Length: 355
Ligand SMILES: Nc1ncnc2c1ncn2[C@@H]1O[C@H](COP(=O)(O)OP(=O)(O)O)[C@@H](O)[C@H]1O
Ligand SMILES: [Mg+2]
Image (cartoon, rainbow, N blue to C red; front, side, top):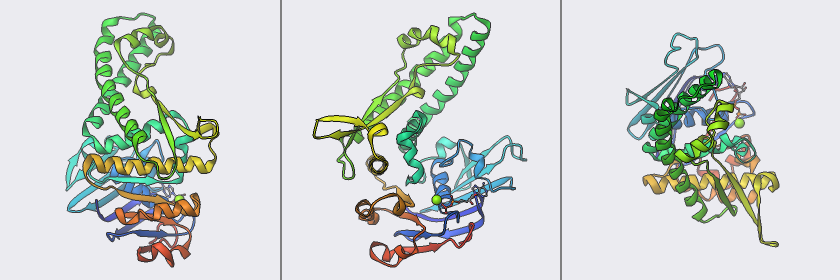
């Protein structure tokens, strides 16, 4: 995979910038708050059709503006995203996606630019809420599998409808089973596909060789089935939401303790450093998984790893640079001068979104 160029317009702190990439490594140097993470986020947005860090994608629109535009060229394929703030003139279609000038739905847009990001934000995946871990699984599987994208979309829509129905039942106190049959069957059908694919992914990770850090993933899956739905019927009535299904999935990461032959959850017992290594290892698995599924090596985006990792692990990462197009951000200008990064092209962010 080769990202040739990108253009950003009113995206975060960028007004209008264009950049052409070399096939090799690109090093982006700039002081704090100059827009390094934002630059990688723009690439991520073209890859996943959504933001790296926000629940609300419209937050990427530059302060005081209505519309942000991103475009990128991957080989001969041109990708474009238009993001409009709600309440602006395009409030109905908040995001528009185009491939070679033709409008697409998000599920047909994703998968054109394969990218794996490793950023300080990812640490939240270990310590934060289950939704962050589900997002990670989704993010990997959405890139590799159109069938997963379709099922997830259908599941999410049906879940919203079923929850609205539960809420109405909770208010009225009357539950008519026939009303549930339709949504239940969609949730069971799509939810089962999602669970199965997540399980395959986690098995792939568990069976992969761990060069960075040794751990096992425990998949805490919330199976959705007729039986389970009826088992939770009363509880759902009280809660007004659907209580079983992949939207309640989680996983935990367990490291080994050789001395006493037990495992411990990295979330509670891992040092910050170990948590970082687990995430880095997961990201490298993500690269390998995508490559195995699609026979295409994703591009690698590394945000600020020099302040996140120790020398040994930085070297491990740097050894991988030649294997794919890589874009690295840093505040340390001296990195451009020596060692591994001698060959890299350098982009300097002078201040606030200026290249
Ligand atoms: N929607 C936005 N519009 C304008 N500026 C923004 C927006 N979102 C974030 N910023 C600004 O971008 C800057 C941070 O950029 P970032 O890429 O995180 O910096 P760094 O180079 O440290 O990674 C901050 O000054 C922040 O206020
Ligand atoms: Mg940053």
